[in-house]
Length: 464
Image (tube, rainbow, N blue to C red; front, side, top):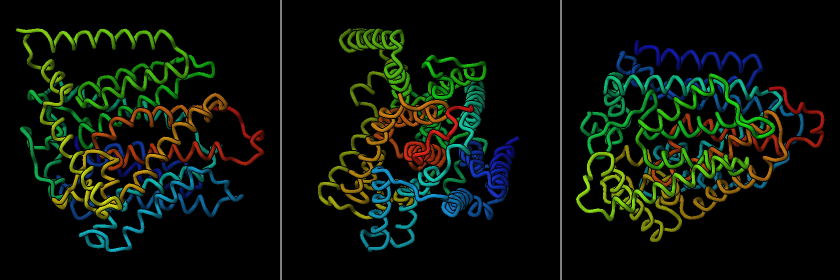
């Protein structure tokens, strides 16, 4: 049955290509959602099936498809697009980081610098793929429903993993694939990597995603999309049967991914949604839960003779930063910050993050902001943070003025950006193709909505 994963990957790619060739450029989202979500699992199974010679070709499907759709978007433009300040900032980020590819900065060779550049800055290409797309040609509700269905599927897989107490990745050839292509040796008690386990011997499950961190982050994206999909014009949340199943599956996923930063962000998303839609019963419930939680934590830290094992110990060690994972984060952050202080213009591309990790020469890491700062310096970090904050502010500004599909996109972007802020502190979220591509494509689509031609009254307000 494992062959189903590479089959879904290939089928979604060819379906997307067929739609693009027919002129239906929104079809690229089929591949983003169904192909990229299980990308690593599909490649692992392909490796297990003896298709390792084809994997390098499969790996570039996503870039080729994105660049093709971007090119078609450009040549089909009927007017010169009006650029927003965010557009200029994103182009500036691309141009600035590209300088680090051309100049021999750092110890990495040109090829490694180019690979690191793609890992760090390809989101710009994805952003403009959405930015230059006409919102009238995108059936937003359909693709948001696809993400809801994907979330249900992920929940079913993780439930199966929990019932049998076994990682899916232990059957897919994950460890062998990652070692062969990325030079990451298997680690941890389960022969996969350390990210698949938590303190206390608990398993962290990844469903069909690359690892538990990606699984948890993908769940945050799904939650934001589900909320946006079922939020009505009067800001009442009315999910149908699929929506309720998707919400349940998302909660199942965030619990068993056992990733602390995304778990907190899951409820931050719900809280921010309640604030912007003035749902007082949710905000009051969250406040009460926070109060009860704080009281319980005070009790745990002050009580003597209380059994502090299992999940309780994990929680306490997380709060006081005494568990190995938290200590590891602090050490990585300290190393990265020291590197930025010593070299404020950066050490060069490929010195931090995924590419550096595969070369065994990582400086800092485990923090998207620090990874950018270590490689390209504080100017690139400032641009990235400024883009991020401006997208949140712009979403908040425009949300009350948009309707229908446009409001859905705006709501999703706002909640995604709010939800990812904390996980970006503890992981390299941009290294996940699925999360990065869907996230930035929607950001581009939002800016396309905001900066559309002045004849906006000709656009249908809502046909979802």
